Image 1 (cartoon, rainbow, N blue to C red):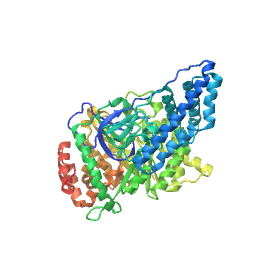
Image 2 (cartoon, helix red, strand yellow):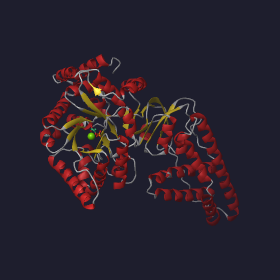
Image 3 (cartoon, rainbow, N blue to C red):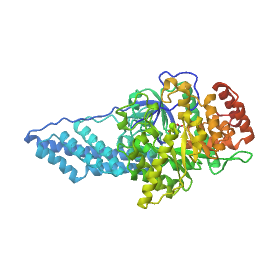
Image 4 (cartoon, protein in one colour):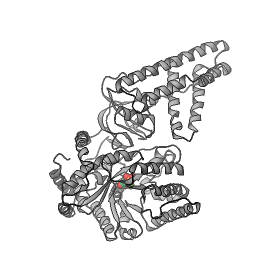
Length: 600
Ligand code: PEP
Ligand code: MG
């Protein structure tokens, strides 16, 4: 699993010293700013140790005591959690019951005592051997629920070993001040045992949405981001950390600007939350009756629910590569299909734009991380990688097409740079449709096919591309990086990463114009779409579909509902006459503040 850094949403004029912005998977929403505690990766490797025959009864007695102590520990942890959290939300208590059940499992206990008796193993070695064997059995199961249980088995093993070795681990029950917890991978029981009064959020190197860590975090209502890659090596105990579980971002040693921005975000979140209830069912309609569509970007099917709660009218970008990033094994066609069918069930007839795999560069799988490229953003990423691995690409396309009969599915190819790439991708899609037809599998042949416009070459040739696709979606995150020659993951040049650069704005404008000329729809799905600073401008440039993080929707909608198209067009005309990003930002700030005085 990998993490990637994201650029700040607004331009920064200064370069950052040690600030680090990391993107992972937000699994529990909210923003927290706090001091970090880093949990060491506990690696209890047990050497092989044999005992004399006469010591066997003593080893069995030690083992029995460790089991009893472990069950007692778990009982106390469960009671303490129930006391803090009240009811057993989302099965948190079930984790402890499961662990206690395993520790009472007669077959498992007998296997361990047999290991001691027959092989004269020390109690520690017997526990380690048998538990790891058991973990491997779970790991081999294809069902994700069971493979996730491997972490529980490791957790139980460690608890037993700690009790045997006599080193009670320093848990997080005895904190005296507020902290956020940074760990490689919080074990389920560690997560559940967090002192709710003082642990205000957490972030981990690995993890996925279906892990216990995520379930428990949501149950405890603390912001959490997982799948950050190497956050444990980036943070030292005592560092100030911002965890933004809503956007899936962690900022280590934030500068003054980020602190202000996130304090403000926290405040706004609360205030906007109140307004949200009133806005959610209202259309994104200007005062003079022009309606636009506000959609959401998602990484997992489950994200659809939050997006709809925030007022999304559909999903404008489903980043399907997270299916790969959240798992150690390559997803099968069925894994893809299940995910798409799930998303379609949740989205309830609204559009779902499924972007084909955008792996590589900032989104590495564990296997890919073994042989990194020299210039990954200019390398074998995204559609290029798919066209180099047709079986992988076909697996995904088959699943997308199979799901097309279940709802309003649209396919989108990322990072298209040349007409030949687009044609090749469409040819593979045609092959897939023919295969499905031969097999008698139903699909919707007229499923709309679009492309992301995220490299300058695609804008320059937009009219040619427009004749071969049903829609464009502008990926400003990459478009900015490729236009301004700024690595979007490099904090040293983060100050140069700027949507307001006049060259970027011209490319956005030209893409929208090309779409209109060729009668195809155009959306923006990069971060710029959700930044209220650019709402008036994008509206004035004629953008009809905005796709953004769900939590950004209310503010953008509020701006749209407070202006007229005439005013937005005036703003756009004025902005396009400026020659520097400074002027652009200054003007847009002033104009936006007239609508939302507390903005920025
Ligand atoms: C983009 O590049 O703007 C985009 C939306 O895609 P991603 O951030 O996933 O590269
Ligand atoms: Mg992109």
